[in-house]
Every structure is written in structure tokens, then in C-alpha cells.
Length: 273
Image 1 (cartoon, rainbow, N blue to C red):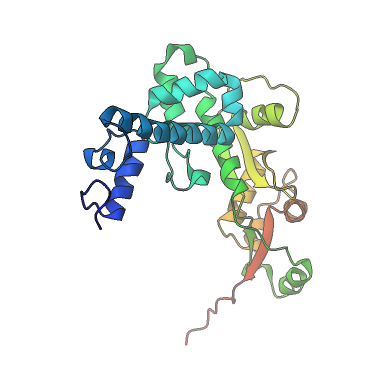
Image 2 (cartoon, one colour):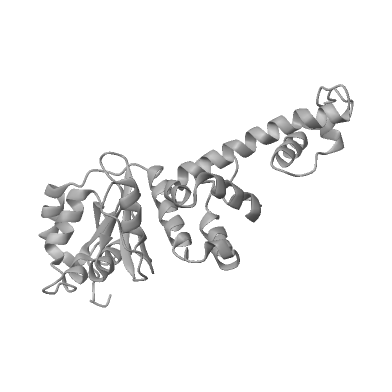
């Protein structure tokens, strides 16, 4: 159908041009012709209002997703840095809950080339943790673990049982103690000395609906990863050592909501048919 400018622009095409223009592309003449204004300069100014609004929305969305990074760098420098790295920050623009996926990579690139960021090598790893926290907030709800049903199923043998982790659970390892750093900034934990050392942790949305990282030992991380990847209960029990009490850890993780369900597979027959 014909628009006010007489260009006959189809709605879908017009929408694509509008999105591209408000996200930074040079304004299309066909689009400008559909904007009320006294002249081209006035039309560009009016389009600029939409562009500034979208840019501010995106910046505020990223500040919400990466609050510790913003606090460490300062809000003014954070915004300047995002302007310098430019481009899309990852995730569809129509879904602000997923907007920001590229920030850890972009911060990593910035740390490598910007002299003022010397000593901030941990920053992309912190951003990756913050993105996990952000995504965990929007994960699907979990079922409540049925301990009675699990007990009955375990009577048939542990090699057919597999535990299932929470939809919000994310396992990570970083070369810096970014989990302790996040907890110091967001939960008031003691300040952390930023020495380079490997850090295992998981992120989970708790019963208060506020996701947070939880530190793990390397052995605990290995066990939780095996649960997540579908190892059967018998295989998990074989991982037990004096320093890795598998049974008590699995019970603790069920109570904390990290493990939320189980599945029971039919035992494989070894008899030839």
C-alpha cells in the first residue's frame, strides 16, 4: 500500500529500514520521505530522536546485565568503551533479555589493544560470569525434585538412573577468581585479591529468584559436569573419594535446586535375540 510519501513502500521493508536507521545505518531516502518534517534536516532530526532513544535503551540494558563491569570501569568509561568497540553487541535487538552476548569477546579485544586497560585481563571472564547470571535470570522454571519417587526408582539399580540439572545452572571455569570478585561487589563478601588462579564455579538462580555464582572445587565441578552431561548414578558413585563425598554432595545439590529431576532408562539386555 502507498505511504504518505507516495513511495508504495511495503510494511515489512519499511520496518527493516526503520530498524536499520535507528540502529545506526545512514537514513534511507524512502524512509525520510515518510517522516513528518519541514525539510530533510528536520526529518533527520526527528529520526535522530528515535535513534538516541534506542541507543540509550541498549546502553541501559547492558548496564543492567553487566553491573560489576560497569562499577569497576565507571559508567562514563563503560559507555565510551562501548561506543569505541561499536557494532552489534550480540543477541537479537527485539529481545533485550538476550542482548549483550558479544560483550565478553568485545571486552577481551579491548583489553588486548587499549593501554589504559592494562591489568584488567580478568575483565572478559568477569563479563562472561555476568552474562551467565543475566541468562540464568530468564531460564525456564524447574520441577520440584520428587525424593520419594527417586528412592523407589533407586531400588531397581543405579545404572539406569540419570539426574537432571536446573535449566538455570551454568558451569564455568576461569583463570581468575571472578566468582569471588562478583560476590564481593554484589553480595558484600570480603574483598578478593586478584591473583591469577583457576576458579571453578557454577551460576544458579536460587529460591529468591536472584542468580549468583557458587564456588566449587575442581573435583566438585567435575562431578557436577558429569551430572549435567548425563552420567548414570552408578558412574557418579564411582567418582567418590575421601575428599569427594558423592552421596552427600548430590543430596546437597538437590536441596539447593541445582539438581531438579531424574530419568530412569530401561536396563540394556545382553541376551542375543
